[in-house]
Amino acid sequence: MGAGLAAGWPGGVVAAEKETFRPDGAALYQKHCAVCHGERGDGRTRARRGLDPPPRDFTTARAREELSRERMIASVTHGRPGTAMMPFAGRLSAAEIEAVVDYIHQAFMQGAPNRGLPPHLARGERIYTRHCAVCHGDRGSGALWTRSSLNPPPRDFTTARAREELSRERMIASVTHGRPGTAMMPFGGRLSEADIEAVVDYIRATFMQGPTPEPLATRLERPFPKGLRGDPEAGRRLYRANCTPCHGERGDGRGPRASSISPPPRNFLASEARARLDRPALFRAVRDGVQGTVMPAWGKVLTEQQIADVAEYIFQAFLHPDAGVAKKNP
Image (cartoon, rainbow, N blue to C red):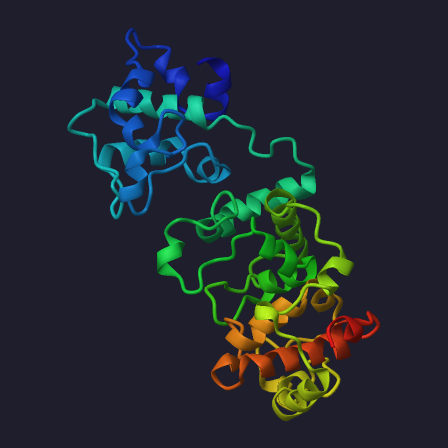
């Protein structure tokens, strides 16, 4: 296990080399630990399905960040309250516990933390591991415990929807100010602007590199569900009667009520809105509301035809006024 382990793992192999007998950490791990933590130390075992929280994945950057040798020895010795990790002090000697801990570190936790990332993204990875992974998960898809504990659950950055909705600017704002109506807290008082930009860029580079977005022309032609066709003139009347207090006459999110609403109403003129909102997305937002905002579910008040009408008006008047869509969806 040599000097490399001793240099990065204080008090480990150097002390052990003076002993005449060293317990077999690999054999001890296979006998006592692999059933939960897995052959590869990643926690991907059948046992994890029945455990909440799941067994520790030793291969992650978060594990490298959090788990000192002392903490691991204490966990194996005394167990971890609130988890399925039981104490082994009555089963293993102190030397055996040290051996299995050193084996776990050497076998599963020696990945370079930054994986050759540029300095800016390496900085973002460290911040993500320290502040974000507990909810969003080591792989950006949401930690297992949050799916049943938080409503709404944390954002899954790996989805197509996240790639559509989350501009860099929106993510920076969310990390800085938090997201009302969710468990996402503001980090503007904890992290510098440079730190926030670094962690956002790390998330985008690591978890959000999906397929190329669909061409605009294709999205412009995407129809409403159930064969509905919106009437923009009928939609204009509905919009003015129901939507202008928040979204404004011009669709810029500056209606008379907007100043008292957090997060602010959607600005349909913003490039982000134009990049992601098509007819089906508008229809769903009007019908179902938008979680974490004051946007209500109009499906309880309007018919589906009326929803299509107002969505068509918004689409033509604010989002894509020059697309000639009226001829395609009369």
